[in-house]
Length: 431
Image 1 (cartoon, rainbow, N blue to C red):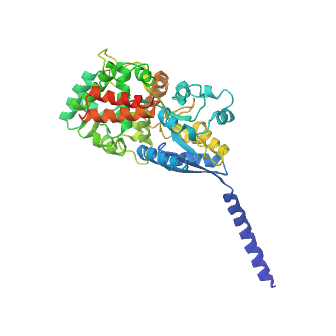
Image 2: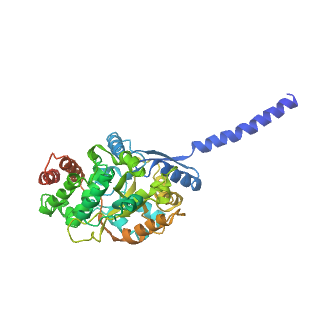
Image 3: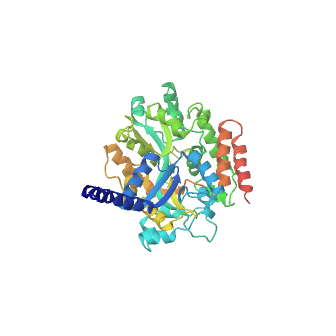
């Protein structure tokens, strides 16, 4: 063989061997699949990038849906035994619905943070993680990633130009709604086509009228047809009758239905939670969302006539992550879960202001405006520590019944009393 041919052979071999080795290395990557509605696509991508940079050899494949589509996807995959390795969960009804498909996570938690791991989370995150577990079942079927408060927001320049303040009572809410209706603006831009947002508003009202009563009804110690529930449902109906909520709200979803109007400055108020901060982290934020300069949170106005909102806010866990029994590599899934709660992925998440951390000590690395910093301080130092009531219900049937009843009452198809009977019937069906 000519020397030239030998040199070519050596050169070719030198090129091929590393390629083969690289291919073999990629073939050995451990893959973890994730399906959820949260965090949003761009944020999840940042979390994956941060995780993979510090965990070579593990790859994460994600599929992120809007909430409604995710619930359908979860049902379909559960029915066909095709759940992803890790899944997004809410505490209470959603976790309990799929509990039999989920692994207990205490061992993962101890492995990640030590025997005293619970002390490193905000108390409300630990308290709510097991919401709805059967009596005597102390397992954690999901670990909290993000927490939140549920509240209202107002558009700062709209209120300034109208010369009004955020309402603190229901009567004040009616009055400012008249001002904004006259200006051609939505007083309270509500995606009432979404059951979760209907439920969020009602939960704030019922905890004002009768704090904690709804949880007593869930376990049979009160009836959903009791007077306080009917009163709360009556206030819900008045949001529509008094033109506080924009016309056609029942035909609009929160995402993406209300977003354009809110970001475009056509909504004076809107019901979201601490997660609204993430609008500032979009690739091309609107002028109002730039540095969160145009929005500020406030508590749902008092409906009882006492003159002030209740001290205890509604909120708790935004999203948990569970590891399913379908997971092929439980250790790798645990590494992803732990990193997204307290590691590099978690920092990437919190930097987007997606919501509030469940793990104590995390905060964004940068604030663009004083308002953005103040909103974060308000949430984490004043509001989050006062959250007492869980946003979620423990019973899937009651949750669905309440969402259906709220739609029927808002549409005028049921009276408030009939609406609460729908909820009581849903509860009764589970006995």
